Structures are given as C-alpha cells and as structure tokens.
Length: 257
Image 1 (cartoon, rainbow, N blue to C red):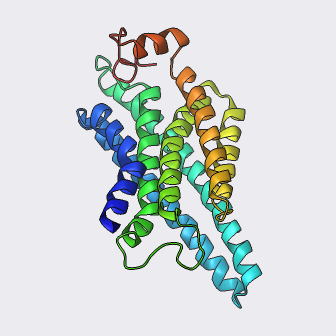
Image 2: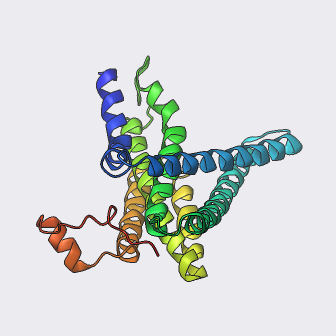
C-alpha cells in the first residue's frame, strides 16, 4: 500500500510537469539550458531565504510556540519576496542575453520572451515542487500510518495536489510576470506577488486541507486563463486546439518580439 501511495502521489505532483517537459522542452537543447538556469535561480532564492530565516531565528533565540509560529510566517513572506526578486533578475538576464544574441548573429532567430517566460516558469515550478514535496513523499513509503492519532488521513494526497498547483502556478506566474515586464505594466508584477503570497499563506492553515486546496485551484485557474491570453491565445485558437484543427502549436511557433 505504501508503494501505491508513493507512486500515486508522485505522479499527481510531478506528472503534468513531466509531460510539459517531455512534449515542449526536451527536444530543444536551448530550452533545457534555460530551464536549468531557472531552476538554479530558484535554488539561489531558497538559499538567501534560508540564510535570512536562520539569522533571524538565531538572533531571536528562546523559542516558544507563539514565537515559532510568527517566525514561520516571516519565513514564508521573505521567501516569496525573494523568489519574485530572483524572477525579475532572471527576466533581466534573459533580456540581456536575447539582445546579445541579436547583436552577435542578427540573422539567427532568437527565442521569444513569451517562450522564455514559460520555460523559466517551469524551471521555477519543478524545483519548487521537488523541494517542497520530496521529503513528504519519502515518508509515504513508511513505516507508520497517517491519521492513526487523529490527524488527517489524506495528508499525502493533499500535499501532492498542493505541489501540483504550486508547480503550475509558477509557470503561469512566469508568463504573466514577464509579460508585465515587457509591457511595463507594473501592477501585473504586484498581482503576481500578492497571489503568490496568498497561495503560500494558504499552506499555513494545514488542518483545513479542503479549503486551501479549493482556493489554490481557483487562483490557478484564474492565473492560467490570464497567462493563456497574454501569451497570444484566444477563444478561437482554444476551440481549434480542442477540436484538433489547429496546426500551429503555440509554444513551438512563437515569433521573436
């Protein structure tokens, strides 16, 4: 039973991200490089967040339960802020790299920022999902039984679905964030930051799994619709895609901007 829980939760949490990687990334070496760099940027943001949290915890000392709770909330807020700062830094890096490629080889078609936003967002999401869920996933192999002492018995399943939503949200946040930077719509960056803070805050109400999952998936759907339209999608193209009548694949046929 533990093996079934392990593989089931693993495929729930990482199946969609793996499918996106196989069908849209793995065939292009340049996209693999950008995805790995995006994952590295997320790792560096985690390192800075951990250093700040560790320094703050050391300075406060004398840990009691209320103080630890506030320290956890502080760590979540700082982590989200630093992640979005590194997302902006990665956008600036990609912008400079794209401009440099055009100067070096003006006849070579550079990847569009929309495509780079998708790839970098997927890199952020995969690394975020791995770090947030891998320890929980390893515990699902046992020994022990979840819920035997009155705790929620669906802990692993709920954690898998939350990891899935966070991974996909990073993709959508990346697309919307980069579009806001390109068009200088700075309120878009604020919306991404606030929605990221909200979803992260939902993880703090751990006993109420149904509530935080529903709210997180509502936010994911809204951000997904927004990302779809800012990346060039339309109701007509969606209809053609669903009916298998659209010969142009959105991610593979982006024009350089």
